[in-house]
Length: 204
Image (tube, rainbow, N blue to C red; front, top):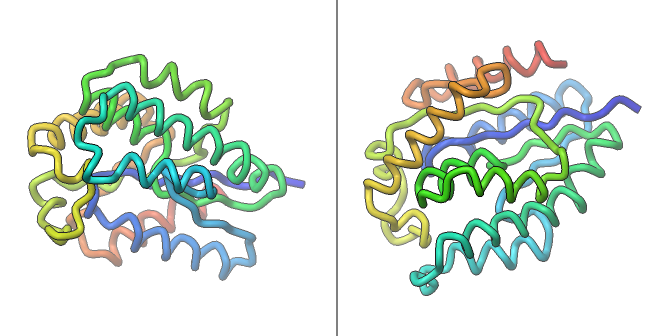
């Protein structure tokens, strides 16, 4: 059976990933493809519990390396239990965030550098997205789209942290132009969806 496509979406919180994931799922299902939608951190019972620890506002004292290792632990479970088995069965996987998020948030945002990529090389066990859509939206704009009362521990970080994360995403897009497709998330939702559709149909 043909291996399924692994599609990931990246960007700052508030960039519109959830909306586009819904559109991607509909596109694939309309064409008769099996598809699962998942997220990181999360996607399995264990990974979702780790997610709660990471994002809990009460865990403000969390060390950056602890944070990075928790993300990697959640990812390892997710890859082995959900992502890789689905892909091997020919099911397409659409995931809200993957390794690029860790590199951007912990590598650049927390200043952990290359250690994040090294840790996640083990966690992902060779699982790499076929295509990644980076919904590019400046941090000051993206934060304005999130309701203040719903902010998690990461979203509550100061603007300079989010600027470093944004810079990390832009660096990743330059390093992997064959995989990461940068899309202006400030455009109309329909325009963003159309660009994504064109790229996915080429892959199919």
